[in-house]
Length: 129
Image (tube, rainbow, N blue to C red; front, side, top):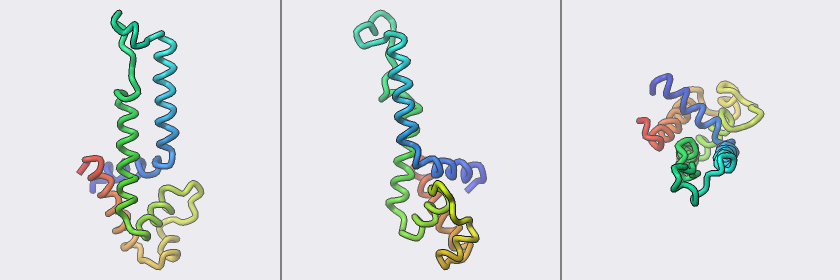
């Protein structure tokens, strides 16, 4: 996997716990913007087009990323989920890669291989590979 793609997938995984909050914020922004402009379905015939939550590309992208990580987590075994949780999802990180080797009793290369396999699953779900 290319370095840029690897870094992007890492950011997608790290943001996973906050996707619901991000989606809600975007939905509220759209609703507020439409309300401020006075745009409704009834006056859309006058040339005003309301931005709908279902059509917003940023919300669709957030939902696609959330589903990709969720599906990859469901497809992964317990050890891989532990690795991803400890390295990317935990708010107060307790372990780095070296600490995980001692905690899980796996070698660094085994942990990296499992992490990379998880990242590959996320990339495939996002159609990046």
